[in-house]
Image (cartoon, rainbow, N blue to C red; front, top):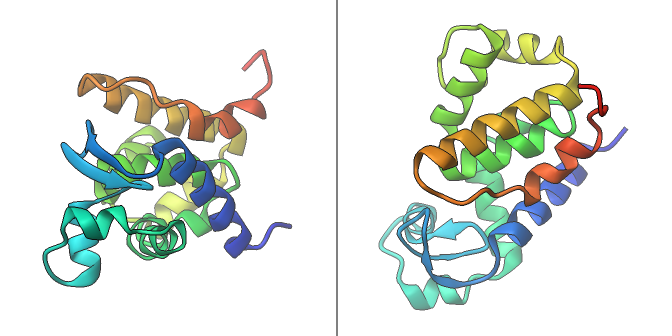
Length: 167
């Protein structure tokens, strides 16, 4: 069994690699970002206004700490199966935790609380993890398409690799 810390490291690496290092104009965040962290998230993390030089200096280790505390844990990723954790983490990073969870909850047919509550975890655990990961990735891609954003398949590749061809 893979330990939760190892799952976070693998998922964070996939997401940060897909998002890339510093970019002066991230289309999703409508401004600068580094390793999936924008000025807004960095400002909340430091408890005050962040600026571009701070973002430019953000290391992958620091970004991972921010993403762990501000996205991974709030979306409940450690409580989901391997693959589902990555797909949900990537979706929550872009859409926000409440939106990603509410869409997952709608998909699972449970009340959309926008929180990783017990009913959601039980319903998710009853699903085939590979198929649920694929479905979460599809929800994420649909969310991106509605905003005119390009497909972002890199972090979802792991979810799709384990899905049988006939699924």
